[in-house]
Length: 428
Image (tube, rainbow, N blue to C red; front, side, top):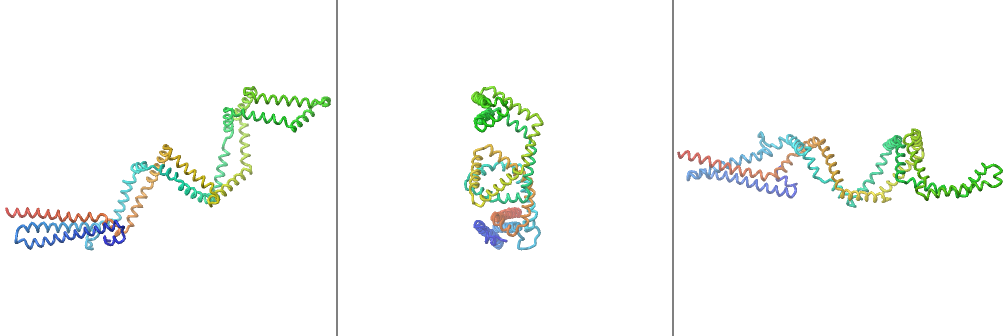
């Protein structure tokens, strides 16, 4: 392929360069032809004056130099005049070697760990992510995209057995949790913060209210009456005892509730702390808690609750993905926007994210650089060399044509110098 055929499909810039290449080629050919004409004319006029000998020497050497450099430039791309001359069409003949060396060069000099890491650390990936997420439209598009994927992901989770596997793993992890230390620690924090006193006040208030209920009073009265001797029943001692019991209890409850320093509160503290200590140390408590945990996890109601939660979540996601409900999409988009704003405001987090991405990409490139090298080499080997040569020639051919100009000039000067030396030697 020559520059003319290439210019038929190249971009406007390449077409202009192809036109300039044709112009320079024409000038170079004209210079070569001019040197040849001057040489012939000088040889013819040589008998008339010795100066034409110098002109002929210059033109002769310039013609030879121009021809030699024309041959060198043409041989780089194709066979001169189509002749099968050895060591011509160099680029075509060495396509595979050029491909392998190009891939090797890129692997060694462009994909080495140090320069790759240095370049990656110059890129602020986190800021790009923050700016991208901060755009409401992009975040909304991302939310809708994720929602379209979620129903398929949930269906795949069910059909692939992943749901069952996850459920079993969760149940196994829950079974392995030792609840006694957790419960003890929670209760210690509850007591340390003084919140147990509020619980005591609520219990006392509930008991006070229960003692004033007619039904409760009737039950207590009947119980007292059943325990009293027959003689005392005749004197309605049960009513008297009930009244005294209720009055004493309610007075006690009121005293405890109104006095933060009441001794009963200290007894309540010691009772709870003693229970926490026993919960942490006595195996019997641990066993009972573990049994309660196993019974709770084995309840069919818990499995049914899990299925209902899953089905409701799937139904809600499907409605959101179909556009029937925009609540989840709107909320998810707002989450992305807020995440972008938070990331933009947190320089430390951005630095950590950039460092992590740089490490991941550096490792990935280090693992795949040989594959990149092979890919580049295979691509170059598969190129249409005629088209490639057309691209190279159009882009650098103009400069190569100046080699012909220089060859004619340097050759002419060298020939002139040699002829001058020869002329001077003849004079001696």
